[in-house]
Amino acid sequence: MIPAIPSLQDYDISPQYGFLPPELPLELLPDSYYSRWEAVVANLQSLILSKRLREVVERMPILSSSRLHEPAEWRRAYMLLAFITHGYIWGGNRPEERIPPPISIPFLQVCEHLELPTVATYAGVCLWNFKPIFPEEEIDLENLATLSTFTGSLDESWFYLVSVAIEARGAAIIPLMLHAMEAVRVKDSRAVTECLHTMAERVDEIGTLLQRMYENCDPHVFYNRIRPYLAGSKNMADAGLPNGVIFETGRSDDHYVHYGGGSNAQSSLIQFFDIALGVEHRPTGEKRKTDSSESEAEGQAPPPRHNFIQDMRSYMPGPHRRFLEHVSTVANIRDYVEAHRSNRSLTIAYDACLAMLRALRDKHIQMVSRYIIVKSRESRSHSRSLSPQNAPQRQNLAHASRGGSSHNGKLGTKKLRGTGGTALIPFLKQARDETGEPSIDAWARRLLSNGPADGAHHFAALGKMGEHADGEIEIVGLAGTWAMDDSEGGICHW
Image 1 (spheres, one colour):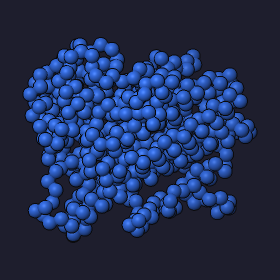
Image 2: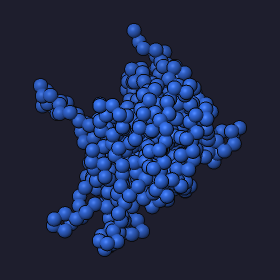
Image 3: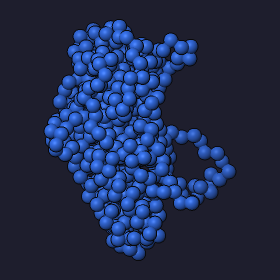
Image 4: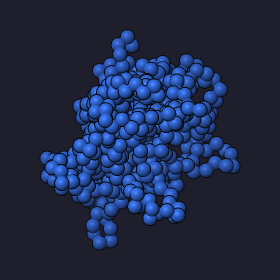
């Protein structure tokens, strides 16, 4: 039996707002029982600045989650506890690996209800952390404000709100592409083509929104002030958490956990685009299989590989994760287009969607370069110029990337990691290149490939600024020209 096309309402998804909550996030929990949580988050910047947050948290009473009822209340509680937890971990000169019961116990309860890990996810800092300035107006970047931040800065608010605006702008694509899947079932090529045209236009608009990040989020502020608070506990030994973190409940089975921090790879919207178009992502570093490589590997068990995109689904709210799983079982657009290659309007519309999605990932790589890689190298250079007695004493994700010197005097070669704990430039580049793989027409395959064009055809490959055929990226900036290493990491990960 063919699975039914999913209904959005079954997965807490709004036809109007997509993966943003169907009702606006609460600005305050209605039960005064939770006023201590609200008070701490309302004064979070002052408590971090005065270094009193840990003391205040440790003296808090242990509150139960039993007085949370509506979905919006659970989401608000999660957001509050996530901000308090990350402030507690990263709000001192050294990170704190042991989270005390006043936060651990209710946070574990709330996360179990929402099917989320005990870490500040994309849902907590973006999807459930906004309000419209004027409720009667639509949700767009000019009508948004954050509910909570770690730093109180415009830069941090803008960083979150660009993602909120992207979610709102892309929301219409969700019912649109579900309609396209229904149209495939009745062989309505015209309807499928129209849906693909509209998706390509919307993804292009999302790319324009993404580039507005530069307007109000300064790379220095992001790298040194905001990004450290978004870090998780996975692969954070250099940042001061070699064991991860432990949520103390007083039980004998308390143990260390390792979670990635907030990441745009946790956006269900971006993963929905991939699933709808049939874009397949392999574990980072794994190349596309050819017939010959498959035959050579026949009979051999493949080595276990890390698939970052799949892993990120465990950081999504449970209903959204199940929605993506359901869509994966009914996605049929790529197969339909491949079976109707002679329909030029259809294949061009499909390839246009791939081109717009790949362009979006190109823009994101450039943003990672500006906000992370350039700032990391500036930070390393600055740290080498300081005398030992004046060296910074704070330990977190920003200072970890300054690295040290190896025994031969050269700068250490530790990988720069994103807030999710993964070295991501290889992942970002591979995800971008894989986006073009399903393209149908030969011209589109050449255009969307990342290597040099076939010598027999005089087509130019679509590359980025200064990207060489071997994949090395050369960036030309005010300070000169430098290469982007594969070992470098990112802000967040699409």
